[in-house]
Length: 483
Picture 1 (cartoon, rainbow, N blue to C red):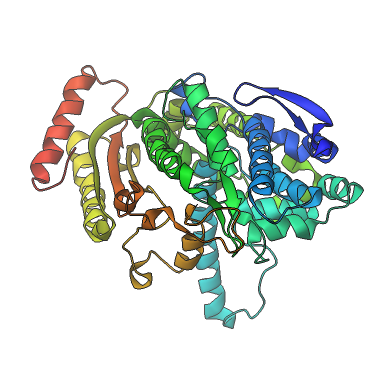
Picture 2: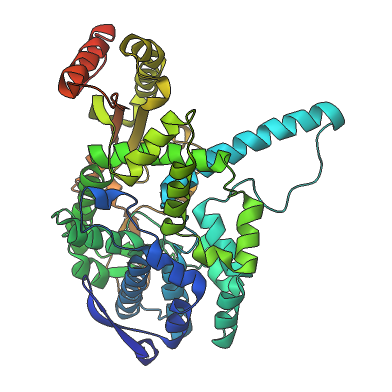
């Protein structure tokens, strides 16, 4: 693998490591350089000042981890993958985040909701006039980041030129992301334990200054292998390290992504982005494709949206008080106040109870808003379900969440049950091992919901008002599972 030392990079997480000439050329393309200005953790740096690392540094780190995993596979298995295959998976890891929007998931969530609703209303009106349209549109109403990433790989001229120069095709990269070939080690890039999550945990721990990402990545990568059926897995010696990794990921999420202030600011950010879209920011699927074609997507980063926010704040009129309040919340770190919360770990079978509780909070907002004189648009209801593994160890196919069960089943962490040098090596999911902690934890999930509110700017005693609102909510919902 001498070809992966064309250049050497110094990284605060992985130290000094090499990259190939192809990877170096990809890093230099405008669409990849853009990732310098897209933060991996959204607004988390407003709570953890050191957590402002970019998707650029994370993507390079994921590429390096993928290379270490491929090196281990070649050392641990009977079959060996050549440098072209190794480069393919390193390249897929490098490009796995290239399609992320500014502010990543917050923006993606808004666009999916806005343009799907818009398409539904438009299609309904068209159907009434002319009937259903038999033509399938070329572009979706809005791209999710994975599909947008594949579109960039398919049509970006600079990426295409680099791939062609080094003997790779766009279809090869897409096949890894899309799991189009059965022999592809796609789980190395996207699964319960992949190069993405391994780098993410380490980098977040380093930046945020929290210990939960201190997993044994060195050992996990060296124990990576493939069984005789082509499943990516770990040797039996790495079972407890894999257990530790999945539990660490849970604590990382609850401490950083689900931190009460981070969540509050992110919820406001979604409303702000939705306001920008309603005021002319075009992020439809067709617009995104055009931006890739004309090269302007390379400048569509966090700072581009911040500039739009500042311009919107200056242009805000007397009828824009609520939007102005939300803009200031994001730009000046004036987070809404947490009023009520429910967070509990419970069996996966309690989804209906959870959704009913969320509905109780949602339906109560108009009355509480009226009683305390705070407009309903200044209240934010956040909800999240967090699994410790893709699927539960005791859930049958009929009980699985949605139609993607089989694909999720394929993405779980697998542990070898035979020696990795055996001609016919076998593995089974970590959650099927009786002495794995995850066998028990996989059957539960974190059910979380929170209610935030922007208190009036002229409020003389915010603490007293906050307490009064919380007391009223508890009085109205005496059986609600408050934390």
